[in-house]
Image 1 (cartoon, rainbow, N blue to C red):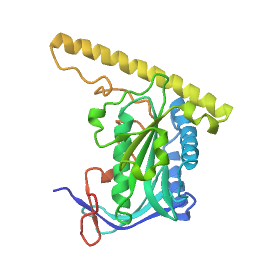
Image 2: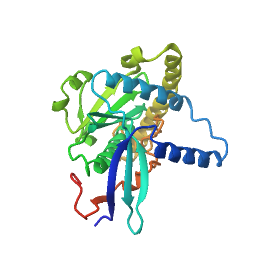
Image 3: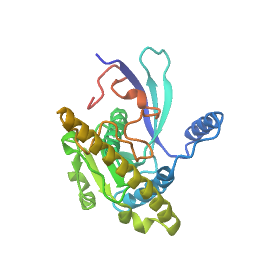
Image 4: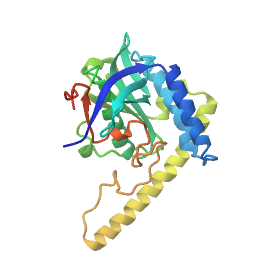
Amino acid sequence: MRAPIKVRRVDLVRVDDPAYVEEMSRQAAAHRRLGPRQDPGDLYRASGLVEAAVRTWLGERLPLLDERIIDAELLPPGERAYVRRFQELDAVIGRAGEPERVVEMKFSANGGAVRRGISQLGRARALLRHRWPDVAGLLVLVEANRTGVELDFDRLREVELVGPEALSRPDSLHPTTLIVLTAADLADHLDAKARGVIERGHDEGDALTAARLTRAARDSEADDAMGAPQASPGWPAQAPSATFDTGDEPDASPFAALAGLHLDSEDDTEAPGG
């Protein structure tokens, strides 16, 4: 049996909520004490611009809430005191303060980022369902290379891939929906400087894609020589990720510990959808 995490309270607050701002300031100060930060690369620099553009693009099609920070009080397994945790969501679709669908955005050249995004959506939805049982999820993948991201839909059976036009019928969307965009789809929301940064991000994404395909071809040749089954080229076991929060690295978010754990409400009843 999986260890339960009890949830006493779940809210959504704005990014300027005083308690959230204070916690982010505390974390930033802690990171500064670790010393100078290593250059994160062009993909990372482009990711924030892409995220802002996607948020504007979505807001033209669906109503977005100003409140997109999860504020929750949790009791981890074996602990006596509840702890307050915040988690920033990329966007929240909803009306009148009621969330209908949480949004996760990925700027990546690697299909592994989709798996990561789905896991993040699942954890956010599991928490929010304690208060809003019907909340759904939307993953927006913006391709960070010029050749496209290969997806293995045999491993994405719980996800429905739709085109942007499907957002005009939000009530018909699957509970976990994936939309794939390119930077060209966001061109109206990017100025010349932002487009230059994203082009450099594409250069990095193309290089990582080429390295991944080269390694996959080399591994395939080795498998052929040994008579072993070939891995799917879209999901190489050791593919380098081209996403700014990589598809395969451990999740450093405050709610990462929720992965694989059962969420109970304070009265020990099972969370909806858990």
